[in-house]
Image (cartoon, rainbow, N blue to C red):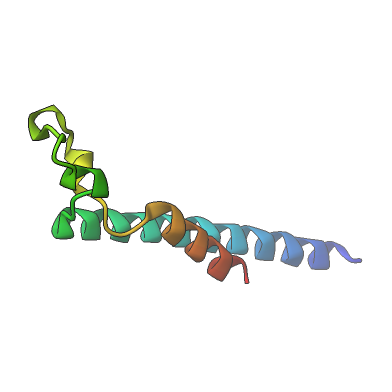
Length: 79
C-alpha cells in the first residue's frame, strides 16, 4: 500500500469513530429529553408500600430504556 492509501484508510477510520461517538451522544441526549418530558414512573412506584418521599428523580424516568436505545444506536451506526 502507498502512503496516501494508508492516510486515506486512517482518515476513514477516524471518520467512522466520530460518527459512532456522535450517534451515541445523540441517542443519549434524545433519551434524556424524552425521559424528562414523559416522566413515566418506574413499575415499583405502583407498589402500595412505595414511599414517594424516599424516592429520587430517577423514580419518574422509566420511559424508554437508555440501555436498549444505546445498543440500537451503536449497532445501527456500526452497520
